[in-house]
Length: 93
Image (cartoon, rainbow, N blue to C red; front, side, top):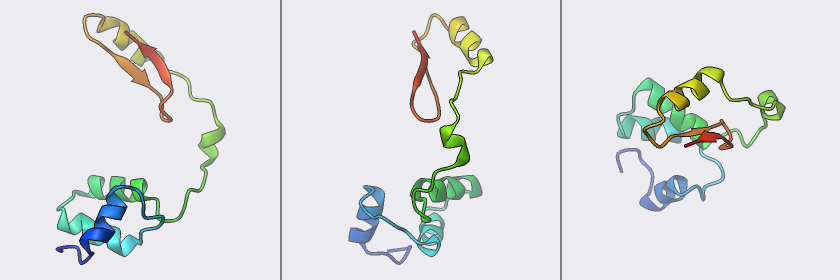
């Protein structure tokens, strides 16, 4: 109600069933939820209102950062899962 959208529309956005969401709606939601600038930017990235355009970096193979792998080894007493940007598993223990 604070964002000026119906509960049904908000539910579709939240569940990912709404194909497109305007920047104005996202801004209204960010204000209603009292999001910080960083959180608002993240919301816009999640909603991706301009469609599912592929970025040039999507075709580049991601490699595990050597420092993160060393950190994972140093934390051998804890369960650790090192994931890439697309959810690929680079290491676990």
